[in-house]
Length: 385
Image 1 (tube, rainbow, N blue to C red):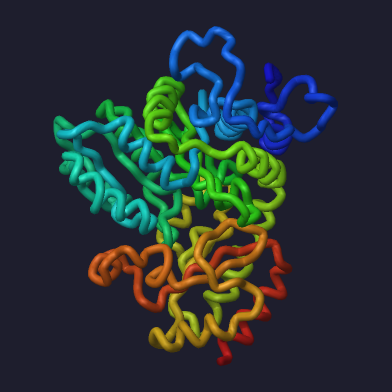
Image 2: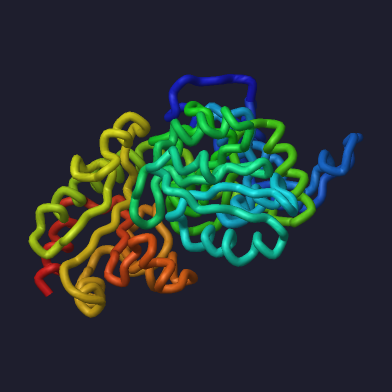
């Protein structure tokens, strides 16, 4: 636990693990116990108890996740939305105001627009590409600015360095959802962000068999968030902790393959006559491509695109696809494809989706680990339908 390594691949395997394998086990055992013997803890939050997210399986993940993003501390939660929710609830109070990027995951959008207002917390949406607009929205009661590394589902890339610098200059907390990028492609603390969020359900676990979340960043903020989470009860089950640790160990090889595969597929789609638009920051045609090249070590395994035609055309395409599962979620070893209007962003009104450019025909694709050529061939046959 006291060792440190400079390369991500080694951290994924060894960071946070016990210095001496428990009973010789090279994999961390599952501590499937809700209750632990009292050893003189000085406060409620230091009691060893499963709901307090501090069993050996939790502690391992906290150390490992912090190491992956070169941050001070980390915390795992019961889901990605639990991570997002507890950050807002722990760090904002009635009367506070925050700024949020205008295109966000549908669940996050729903939390901001439908839940936080009832708690007396206000916000303004902003365009991540127009930094001048952020200053006009700043108020004396502004406490936070919130963005996504790559927006869901349009793969927009805000001026992330400017966001972190803006927050620091004005004494507000900078928070970024880093799910789409993963620590392989982007490490927010290195760019000055205070907190990074993940739906660990996605790339960090990578096997579509758990739901989990994480908050990574400054130690004093993580401590405050931990105390709030302890009261709310959004703890992660020890077996899910074990599976997340297992999944993390292959993250680098998975993510780099998915980066490469997604770029090839995006280029194929961009050149296809039946595709009107492809959203992928690795393409030279992407409006934020140069910015993405400066920020990221890879462009993710996520892309979205517009078919020529109507909703029926999009549905026929989805019916004709053979390899990807037509299902929500992302980041797994199997490719997943969906229409955001019916899944990830179904909670938004058609007017809200239209305002952001999320059309009824937009298709989001999460590239898995299948052979890239097989996926391209599958797209080609489905596009003939």
